[in-house]
Length: 528
Image (cartoon, rainbow, N blue to C red):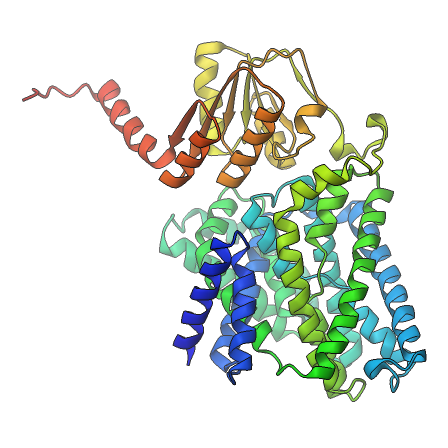
């Protein structure tokens, strides 16, 4: 049976990709189609889906700065949104009850509040998947959205603990000693190499040390995986470990999205109730935008952050299932919530794909703050009088920076999205500033003397480089542009967009290696 699921997922995902939609839309549709054909989820599929979510949260933890959660924009914004959304949804559901619409008539106010609370959450899996596909996980709005989602996960843990009466074991206090293991975990990571042992160590940390240990003491397993990832985030190899787990995690998440469609057999009443819940979804989005705007983020950050979180969460299914077992909600609501979650994914996916275009249109009539009043992470960026600009200061960008310094001196500036990386570069003597090169407002907000003669697009994701290139061209930049690509089709796409030179990093690595050998070893070999 699992073979049929694989075939259906591949075909539907491929069709979605060809239609310029995220593949996860195809996976959801495949799940619905299989459900309609009489197929149901299997224990194997459910287990693989759970593993995918656990690995996802672990890899997010590897990239998450704990200080992010302490920002008032994160904990304050998440708390305010949860309270307001729950209250507003409860009021809307109460109005439906008074009108005698759908399945609401027989529910008590407490049950409506519980349903409103369940619908106030956004999907961590969906949002992060979308951010990764767009290559904007470290963008300002991406960091904001992830912080909100982590806080929502914490709220979920508290709710599940209180509602089930399942108090963590006394041994859970030992979890506070986990930071003491950090030096040992770091040493093992140093010696884990770069191949299969690195992947296996990551799986061990996520599933055993993180999820397994937390579940053993009565805590939420996924939270354990997230915290374990956060403990390793400061290690230099954390990014490499995250990348090594990427393909495995993506494959397992296919099972997650299939499972959503296979969760419940659709019914007419459930579908009608789900449609009513979908009508309420814009209220949730409006509240996100208003709260982000309250913290003085730019229109782009507020809008794209809202679109990322513009969905219902699979957590609603967990709350619904728990309430059903406790006799607080009828089973028919599980169907309605499952359909609503799936429909919200189907709507949010294309909206996120069109996010930048929607921002361009909306920015014409949405009011922007004065530059000096903006949130600190959204203010003007000063390039000074530099003449070479490197966008993306990862390993390739850093290497290019150091090489160009030898030729052009201190006439170079780098731009990086991760603040911790910016600080590290600055400590190492490089002139690097914090900024999001995929931001359509980036170039309009730059303070410079228009001296930039050469721009290097060195971001790891082709989508990000392509989008940055489009923004540069739209602003009539007259200098030269070079960009990196991982695959030949990406190289061709960049060339078609007008880049002056596109470099395939794998081919260039081989050429560079050969040049390095000839320059340093000067082998005495006769040519034929």
